[in-house]
Length: 475
Ligand SMILES: *Cc1c(COP(=O)(O)O)cnc(C)c1O
Image (cartoon, rainbow, N blue to C red):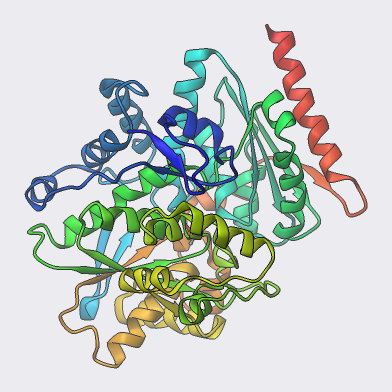
């Protein structure tokens, strides 16, 4: 299996180079050159597999033996998923009235990002220790990505990670999940600004390609196809748990932000999994307007109870457009130049292809999120996080209109309620307790503050250069 860019300028790239580079050199995003199909008979035989076994079957289709020999791949997957707190890795909760919830959050940072990130950490470590090369990961986070990436690489010899978080704009638990990590390869900065402000610094650094090359900078965000490939697995796993006979289509409701999760779902569908999707978003997302009109309207972002979804333009849309245009990279390139000019027109053929697989639901606001958390607790004594609640809000709205009868559907729970006690408390529901979370508040912390008026780019550059210099000394 080789990879090409959504913009058509790069082909024949190996999985290893995809993981180690992030963006393609024509600024496009990597996708596999072909999508392997899984026949229904094979799907049925996968229904009995454990999570790791299923991950192995799916990864083998995307990662060639030259990139990672199969025995090594098995080892990497076993090691990655052994960090999960439940042996089945993903658990499906079956609640009253037919509401199904796929708990994707049993990894170390308590968000679904751990599924892919734990594997990414081990992919990096595998490739880099072979060549004895070092890499510095740079992450701007509005919440869950940072702690998930830190947990995936802390203590690794060949990786340093720099995380910049928007001070006071993540929850306290999210912030402490990052600042209480004392490993020497973890460097946390708390910036006095929004994640958009931090993005400016991060983009400045990544736009300097010579600098990126010189210091081996990389990003573990979901622009990296390595993450997408692992995320395909939970769609197969969730589907097969609900429908082991593979006899009907299942509706998968996805709390959506940057769209990495739904992109993986769309690939699963292209591979033959009988699923369709509802992207549940908050009003910050441009997707619903785009699906209706073909146009993107950008505005300012307002903070909501679902911060991991406070995203306007999910950059994975570029992959979705590529897939929904049957790989028409010229058109994708044209759309992306329109995005840069803030004047987007999606051709009707692409919109129709998107609509055949994806519906969009916009939650009306924080009040609906709180009411949903409350109702789910009242009906089931089951706690959900405010992101998951956006998906469950959609399910309730359908259920109350009698539209869910007989339609098998499942909401992906993207984070643990343990991570969001503020939102749960605000909903008037008993707050779940956890010793692990409680202990965050008594642990020592380590971080550097970035203040307004300081040149953040120069400060981060100095850190990067300091890391590179210390490596030279070690050699
Ligand atoms: C990252 C995240 C999302 C959004 O996922 P995308 O793949 O970016 O669409 C939703 N919920 C939670 C809790 C997250 O951490």
